[in-house]
Amino acid sequence: MNEPVGFAVGAGLRSGHEVLSLCPTCLTTIPGRVLSTAAGVVMKKTCAEHGAFETLIATDLAAYERMRRSPRLVKLPARFGTPEAKGCPDDCGLCPAHDQHTCLAIVEITTRCNLPCPVCLADATAKGPELSLVQVLAALQLLLEAEGGPVPLQFAGGEPTLHPELLDIVRGARALGFAKMEIDSNGLLLARDARLAPALREAGLTGVYLQFDGLAAGESEFIRGRDLRAEKQAAIANCRDAGLQVVLAVTVVPGVNDQALWPLIRYAVDERLTGINFQSVVLSGRYPPELLQTKRRFTATHFMRAIEAQSGGLLVATDFLPMSCPDPRCGLLAYIVVDRDGGLLPLSRLVGDERLRRHVADLSDWDQLLRELGCAEGCDCGDARAKLAAALEGGEFFSIGFHGMMDALSFDQERARRCCVHKLTAEGKLMPFCLYNIKYRHEA
Image (cartoon, rainbow, N blue to C red; front, side, top):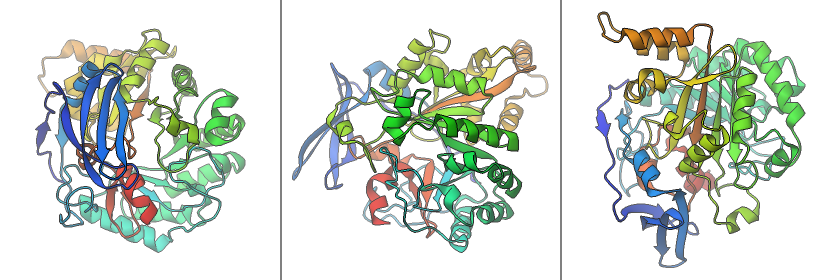
């Protein structure tokens, strides 16, 4: 694995900054501009053929600039897979213009799904092709060569539990050296078949990224098409009994579940899950037409404001650090210590933002993180070390994340070039996941 090559910090917005974006209609690369307006920070752009477009990308200039200026820890891939010829975003694979390696590789092993969700990034249906075991393992071998070693994997779809060779795929990936593996699942088969989660755990799976969009029937009905609360509860119980980590994956839709984020956090904490990750709905794949007609958007800065307000200040905006691997505008993360009474203490308050930021890049489990945060012999931070030890005694760990995915309206080439969450194709190509969904999924 290559060593970090340095930190990079964004320049000031001032009266605006230029971006390269895409026309949402023809997907041609066009220039755009990010500006501060009375409505918030917006991206404006004009296609010569299809006209002008504007979309909200942040609540306010100060919050946007704090994220944009946050330092990045840059690490390049061991090997690039595609030469740079036409320029980003037309040489994806990864090409040498890309400036971040793969922190998470997403392998969509099937296009089939057993749930016709009204909101579906992949536009999955009941019928469709899937990758064979041979194809998956060949792609993973190319990933090892690109990265110089294993990275965390997510097997996705469609619905990956429908794949008839899922257990063999997990076993094969483990044999190649991949140790951190999860499936992105709706949980229906995990709920119905109590034998599936233990079998996956025995094969080498470590976690489940479980779709879970709300605690009220209406939230699930709008996003997934029907009330799935009972199935989700059963899936969680079966996975937890099998020793699989569970992270709830929440698609946030303005006006549907954006006012109910804190109850979801409390639910996940009370269930002693590993974490919860919120993802803004994007206008890619399948979505109700009314979402295209509204100007409402849910961005990272909306998320920070919402959590602070809904938690009554128990968690505040500064508890969430911009991710240090991708563009800092792409994601937020808070590492939390949960005490015996369910109280939440952000780890950044104990060790400081800068120290935590430098240690969380690329780390995928708590034990490794805590080893990295351990003090060197003779280090003069005994008080901080004592506070950390006291907080951890009898406590559990929890993470709260936010992923501000891009669609064609909000696409920013700089963010795509810095992406570390990559789609791994059957041919072994790596592509920024947002860019794949916007520009390349329809070509697959």
